[in-house]
Amino acid sequence: MAQFDYRHVVVGAGITGCTIARRIVEDFGERVLVIDRRDHIGGNCHSSVDPQTGIEVHNYGTHIFHTAEKRVWNFLSRFTEFNSYRHKVVTTYQGRTYHMPVNLQTINSFFGINLRPHEVEGFIREQSAKERISDPRNLEEKAISLIGRELYESFVKGYTVKQWECDPRDLPAEIITRLPFRHGYECDYFTDRYQGLPWDGYARLFENMLEHELIDVRLETDFFAVRADIPQQTAIYYTGPVDRYFDYSYGELSWRSLRFEYEVEAVADYQGTAVMNFADIEVPYTRIHEFRHLYPERESDSGKTVIAREFSMKWKQGDEPYYPVNTDEDRKRLKLYRQEAERLENIHFAGRLGRYRYYDMDKAVLAALELCDELLQFKQ
Ligand code: UDP
Image (tube, rainbow, N blue to C red; front, side, top):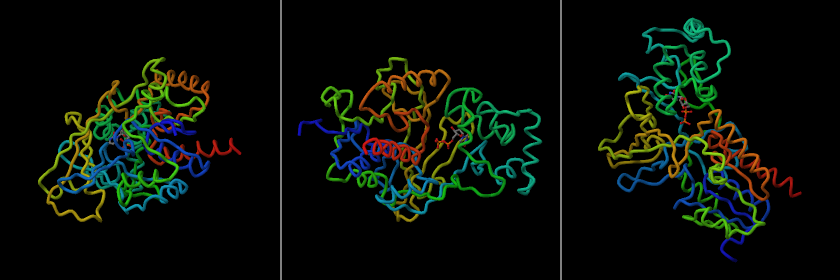
């Protein structure tokens, strides 16, 4: 078989690409080539074992799998079991720690009061009533309407400015509705029925997904360097950035990128939790990850721990894109790129980068499964 002579080529071996590749071979019974320019599969969900401590480290920041979609859970459960980890985040503000998302512990400890759950709504309403926000149109207004100005300014504003490097009034309200607001002491970050970390790690999960006699994987292969060698009739499932595909012809979409500073600390437990957020604007990083906490069932006796400080930064060409910023300008450009995409045959844009959508892992899997459903329907 010539190097790229496949009926299907999946560009990108992240969670979307792995899902599509698996479904194609199972539904169509045809060979699939998966290419990725990196030297590993799994995209930004990739994990690897730190040689010094034996701790499994998430190489692109902590990824917690959580979903309410039974279909997604059942699909991934074919390739891995999950542990019983439940994500709990603590945030630091002015040297003190609080539960995040904001809950009754956060409120009571921040204000030095002792509210009960049924009193929270009135308390917050009193606070946000001063602002008269009836129809919140941006992140700031939405956050104030949910938690009042003081909590917003302490726990959200600084973090958001560091994360997005813009005025929270210029960001869509949806970003903050990712975080629940709790009137009780419940402190799980996610409420989805299905949660956990792949029992043998993300790397193994993706290996299992791609382990099939009809799937070939070629790493360190840049689609743009080889696209001329891919036959015209090959169906391409492209999970890279959509603007890159069109050579940025309508301009760049804006992304946030991340930088991680990994360190091995000579203590068994550095911060007592997997993710510690830092709300103060003066602290240059947004959070510290400590990976050992993701796998409480694993023995680790090195007496050391691995942490990573996360810094958010503006994306520029050559950096890894992580978060779509989604400004008005971006939406206009995206529309133009989508129109271009519709004119093309044999190519499907998928995943967070290909669709310019802030998908969580489960939503990426769901969208990939749905894309395959459509293809299958079309075929029959
Ligand atoms: N956020 C915040 N303070 C926090 C955590 C989150 O203000 O301590 C805001 C911030 O604007 C962030 C958004 O909530 O971009 C969504 O946070 P999430 O934890 O869902 O982001 P992700 O895990 O995708 O980085």
